[in-house]
Amino acid sequence: MYKSQRLIRLIMLVNAKKNFTLRELADELGVSQRTISRDLIELGELGIPVYSVQGRGGGFRLLNERLLPAIAFTESEATALFFASQSLAYFGSVPFGKAAASALDKFYHYLPPDLKERISRLTGKMAIWSPRRSMSAECLEVLLQAVMSRSAVTIVYQSGTSADERVIQPIGLYSDQGYWYCPAYCFTRKAYRLFRADRIRSAVLNEEVCCLDEVDEKTVFNWNEDELKKAPKTDFIVRLTPEGVRMLEGNGRLQPHIECEPDGSGRIDISIPRKDVAFFADMVWMLGPEAVIIEPPEARAWVNGRLAAMQRQYAESIPESESRQVTDIPKSQAP
Image (cartoon, rainbow, N blue to C red; front, side, top):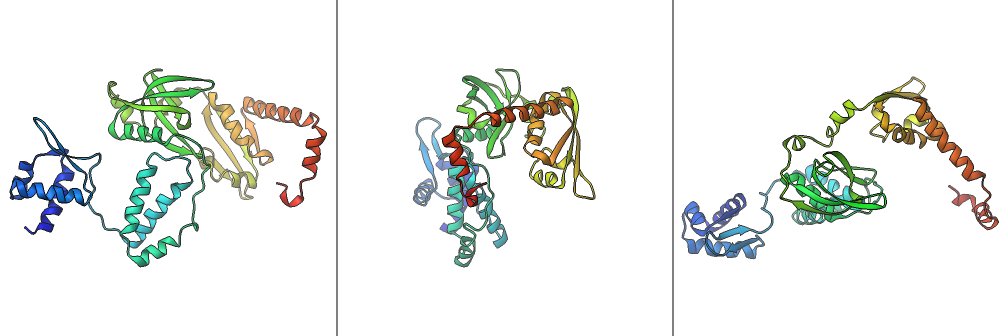
């Protein structure tokens, strides 16, 4: 076996094992332990993170993470991966930010020069906008690691003006309007809860708590299905103008339930948990005159309450100095 072939085979063996000894590798490759020792030193010089473990039962281990085998990509696949990674740039934090940047750098380094040039032309030409929210990347990484390793996490969670410690089993992570959310089973509350990642002040893996199989089987799409089935429901009916239909195009909760009319207007008729009436009414409130809530009465009362509050706010007199500043805004700068 040529040395180059042996080194490639050695990388595959090392990557497949959590730990190993010189004798194991020597027997596998049919060479001496001295040869394997020299090969491991050479792999270390090439950047393969192998380190020795001293004492009884010692040997060698891969440092931190295993290496993935090389994969061949087509030009279209390479472009898609580059764009997918770049699209995360507008998030305030991601659970794998540094790793994604490092992987993209390695990936880009080995591209053919002509493909590099074409991909470079995409910089600043395409983007997926997301509101930039401030949150801890370290906490996101711990939550993601817990999902991947099936571990519990001890967090300090800010709720209102107080922060308390919780032990949770994360189900997953998803992003909505720039915020990261973590549905999880809360051992402290003995119930499923949805945690907003920017309110998590600290997060550490908790190996002392045994995770639950039924929690592990849930996903970010069905984690609260059982709770929603049991919750009291009410009909939520909304009439939309054509502009209201357009404004809801990016709303994942309401848009799938719009029934469009030939003139472009629409209607929403869904069943929602009664406890979430204010939440759904707020989404319709954002549409202004482009939507009217028909049912339930408490949703209409919520909107009327918001209208009354705004009327009181705008009925109050504005200090003369501030009023002058508002009226002096040039038309080109006015919203």
